[in-house]
Length: 238
Image 1: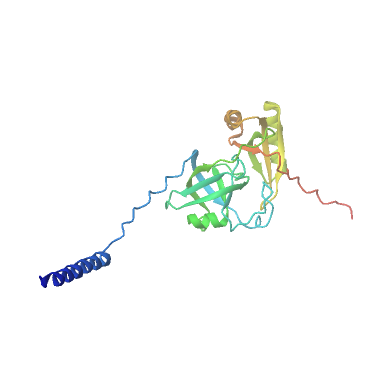
Image 2: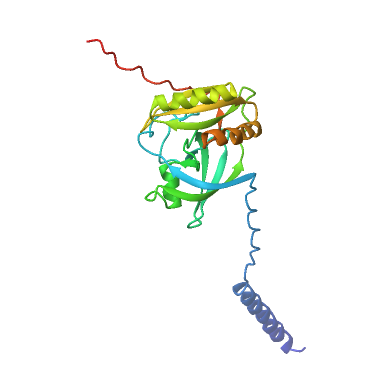
């Protein structure tokens, strides 16, 4: 009998076990990198000047009825439906923030969006007050009900008499013009012209009004938003 065979078998088994241990020790898990998230789909874009607002509007009802909290990421826009989500990029430093539209404004010619304090802080222009921005629409809320209309703001005045003179002049030309009181600091009398079913029609009207008034932009007339009225003048009676 060959007495070397058991010894050879034991040696071979030991070698196999040693190799298996090394393989287990040096095994490396291969992780397949996940695909990068696709870029957000941009539905529409505009560029212009952004401003921000805080006190005294903080804690008051926004145009959609929600209580405005200046430390939440929200904004005011003149025409986008409430609930629309937009990405605002500060073109000066390339910082971006996503905000939800809950309010109306800014009612100042040359500005396109009014941001909350939190959003302006994220974009780095709280101190400056204004910034050149790009606004990209990411999620457009369901278009408002059939009762929605658009008008053209031709001016805004702290002096009601100046607002009334412009209103009367535009009414003679376009047949429909009215004053809307905008409470705030300062309070303003806004002159609105026309009542158009679509934003496109209102833009055509705005081009005509701009020739006469020098300033004109389109605003949405939300049926659910309460129209503020001016406070009654103080009585002169004792």
